[in-house]
Length: 258
Image (cartoon, rainbow, N blue to C red; front, side):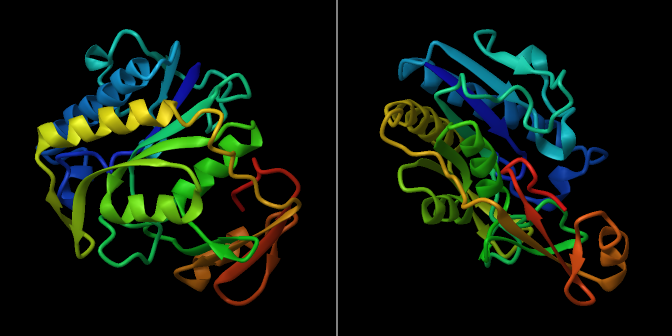
């Protein structure tokens, strides 16, 4: 059984302030150590659950976050040699995990809630349903027939995952207090939760179904300001609906972005 692990940084255990996202802040190094601890807990749980191969993808801000010296040597690190943002994920995998997830933009008490860009993106819909990065990853995985089996992150992210996916194991590692601060779960307990959810997630293989939207799908994006919309609206196949909103029709689930 093959598992593909997608990662982000906002939903990692021990990360409780917006300053920790800043690579120039002294606290960022600690956030990276916690990222590796969470990823390794998920890898360990996956193998405990019967996985025979685990691949991990460094996804926060396009990558460059992993400390590979701390990565469990049993796992393969996807270097995205194919230059695709989803890396080498394909139909040979039996399931995917999302480690360090955050809630979509506009989620109350969602720690560092956003969808793609906290500076420019305001709302994002697929086929009329507002969603964020959790559902986006599930859609991409679904394109390859791969179900999302497990999520770790803040409480709001885990609630969101359950709203979109019928069978999912979740590990809550903190709770947002407003947007930029969080109350943390004990770090050892967080790792135990991740390990347990990962093990149980593998057991969902054959039960969980891939998240597949109706195709062709309508993608609608509302930006924060009209000037953010100007350049996007000039792209081929994009229709401008108003000062801040554009739409396009996508023929495959891999065309998620406008």
